Length: 133
Image (cartoon, rainbow, N blue to C red; front, side, top):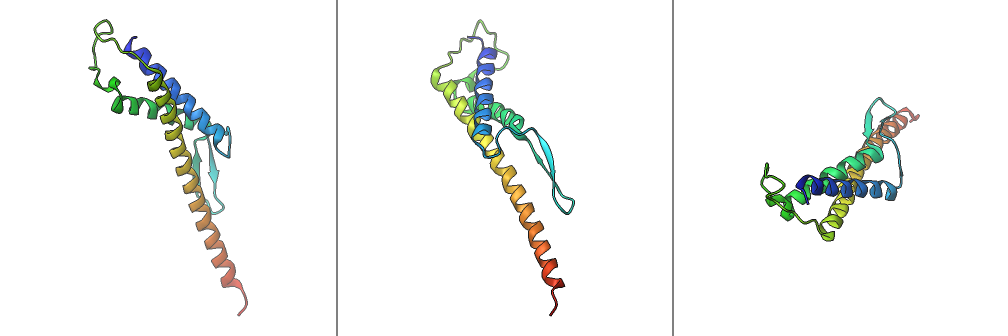
């Protein structure tokens, strides 16, 4: 099988893994958007498209680092190098796509929660300072 076909299949498995992660996340299939915070801050939420992109990149990178695909010489002719993609390689790409997208989802949610907590803390401090003594 040609190397570029293998990379495309691994990328497609990672893309599907990112889609699975979006399905499993409590937000679901949201489009990318910017969320505004009450006091002017903004947070970018990549949505399911971001999950799919990260899943694709993660699967290809991990396949390049930890599978025999990483030992293929760059620029090698397809008729010289024959690479066999196994079910394990494809399923590993799917799993790494889910995991990579999960990391993205967790990081975005952590930042949003941290910014929200800061805003709530500031609002509470302002409210307490206005109370009569």
